[in-house]
Image (cartoon, rainbow, N blue to C red):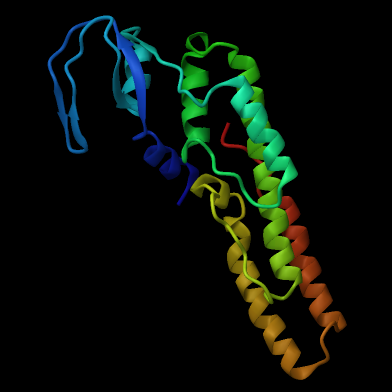
Length: 205
């Protein structure tokens, strides 16, 4: 899927808002939204919350995970361990991008929060590229643990996956006709490693 499609899916996440108007329940295919009562918090899909905020009809309630101490801990844990830590939201980058670009004033310390989220995303994507590269250079002799990797993060290495699978096929063929570690195998691995270093550099933010 393309980034725009992933963002579309992420926009269905629920966020809290405090409306400044009254309105009856809204009936959507995904479910029913409670009646809007001025000053009373309720949960709505992210896309609706952003739309209302842009119309100055609500205030966005900061998600619990947008906390400096929590994000600092996640960042340090992400750098410390080889595995991917479980993120507090599967769509954390989509939520952060839309909320912090639409209503930064609704989020305490929004600039610091934004920087921490970007740092975490960069660390995780670098770890993902290294994981895939190690898988390739080992000639697929071990499994890859991608538990807790989000779909948006996987998208950063998606351009290289077809090339990587083609590489593994050619490596298998090379093993049948030459000694392991020959120059052909090494050049194939070097080629895909260079491609991985060039992929995933852009952020959806």
